[in-house]
Length: 247
Image (cartoon, rainbow, N blue to C red; front, side):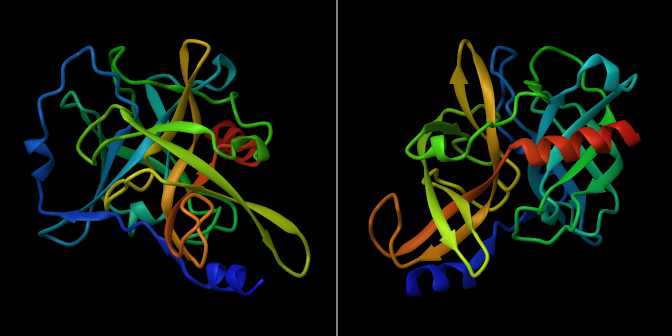
């Protein structure tokens, strides 16, 4: 119980990376055959810097589609003050964020640390749009599941192989699942999709949020930090669907 108490008190949000303007133009050349699992989210922070994080573009069913618009899930903390934000893919397309809707009861560093944004539709087949209605049906099955993650902040494809770990966190009222992962993550990768490849297509498992300190990692068995994600589960799906219906 003591280990769990310490674990709960040391939740750390992945910081959106701060870069000087136009640093993203120095990204490596990406070929058209490379799948873009994520988009960049860039929000200005004052005159001389930009907060950089990532997001996941959604595949919207016909009854919810909005002409000429794309929608994406991002982290709430990656939006900063939500002023003057842009998204870009890895083909040089860049569009201003047109709307922002935070998750219900938003709080940074928790399961509500996410938002839905909209922007002008990105053209081309290079963007992977994760189907809105393909959410996780059970979290316990994720334990030791092999997943994929981006190798670095400036790369679009999920070519890093890593593993998930579920932990039961007990409190006075109930037991909830904590989903950790051992993917290598750096500042600016918050909002990056963690995915699996199933039945010939990429499936969204969740979004990278940050890290937590624990006395005994379920992956290594040793004290240290473990990264965690916000799973794309039924709760998130229902909220996102409601948000899309209000636009």
